[in-house]
Length: 309
Image 1 (spheres, rainbow, N blue to C red):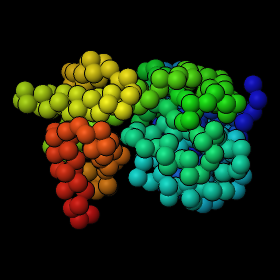
Image 2: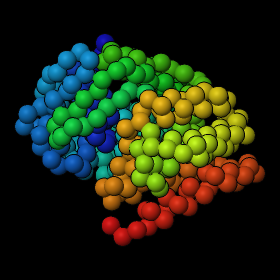
Image 3: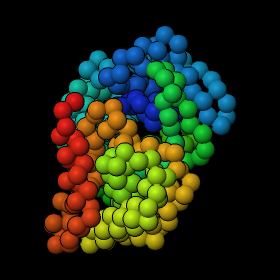
Image 4: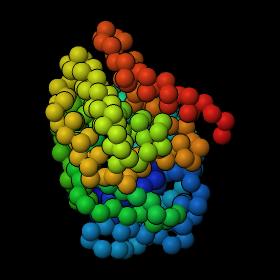
């Protein structure tokens, strides 16, 4: 396996997990983030990583702010929130070169369109991952359970950048496959998040608390169904039954979970509602579909976002 220069833009829980695993596989990894406490902890003590394989410290990592990046990467993986993507890539231009492959594993929709402003379409990759990760404290990340990655070239081409990226992620044990149907997975994840993230953000309920009345599950399923209908109108073969099963499973088995959008509300941060429900509503208008439940939830979360911080 060829050692590659890899940058992780957005080194929160997921970015740090991927960066740590890739560094353990022998790649030269730089974590780029604006969380100075997290960066300082990694520089001083290494990244403390806890997985099913045990606890260890990954020391062969560079940790910097994005504007301090100076060396073009072979691969730059973007984990920032969608609303910060453009600003983060502008700050990290030092990590971008003419041959840099850009990979988005972010939540939401519209990420490929943002990345192609910074690289040729043949160097832009999009994907979805199911790996879990939590940041317990600065410099410490845990991930228990398994996950997968599915990705493809944003323009549909099977380029060397795609092949090299799949190889690097698999060498790190991250179970990656090149999948031409990844857009269906991206839309199915967006449907899941449009329902549960938005509802928890507005109600400040955990996932399980949405079932305190039958209305909660019914509303979540209506929003998920509207989103899948939009995807299918766009020619994306998203599976409504699969999404509904995932929503019901989360309501039953992830009852204490606080989705990221609820965490943002509680911390006084702006949410990603525009990249999820907002993107669904915009796409629905282009296809002539009505998505009243998804649009109503979008307006409610916008009101939450508009509160003084």
